[in-house]
Image 1 (tube, rainbow over the protein chains, first blue to last red):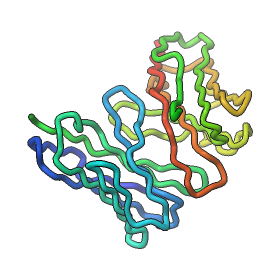
Image 2: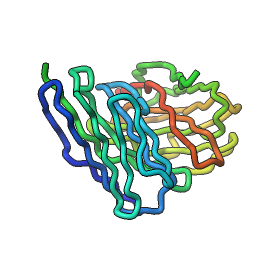
Image 3: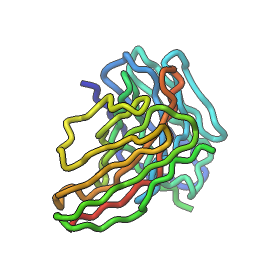
Image 4: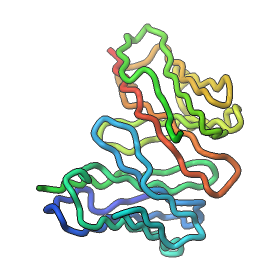
Length: 110
Length: 114
């Protein structure tokens, strides 16, 4: 059974800092890994999708990497802003099913 | 248009009521999903539809009954729910049959069972 772990569970940083969120998974035979953002009580917003054959994806201030063989992914956020405050979830997909980590709750202080 | 629309946004129902949650997408996606999310927990997969056929049921109690009447719509029929079923119910969709299967989520229905 796939298990997905996100570290840290919570993170508080001052505005402007660069930060890294971590995601690890136990079964490396995945189709893709997707990073999401969730604001309180809201749905999930897709941030980045990395296919199993890719090593990284970038969108604006976000960069996600994937090391499938070691079962790890990182989400790098550059120059953090208060508007980045949210819970960040990673999800790995295999055989039509996605398994989510518990998320990292990020607070960016002005 | 990368939008998945869920209605209603909020729903309060009694344990003897029958209600339905609705989900709609117009991205041409042929895979649609229902997830349940409790507070401060990750989403948990309930059902997957592929080409309008139920392909995955994660051992969900029969008081939850999914339906996919066409390629754009997904319903979740609710009957005789329990207070512990109160949660955020999320619908998602993705392309089917390709490795590039980015999932798009709706904003969810906040369900309260009283």
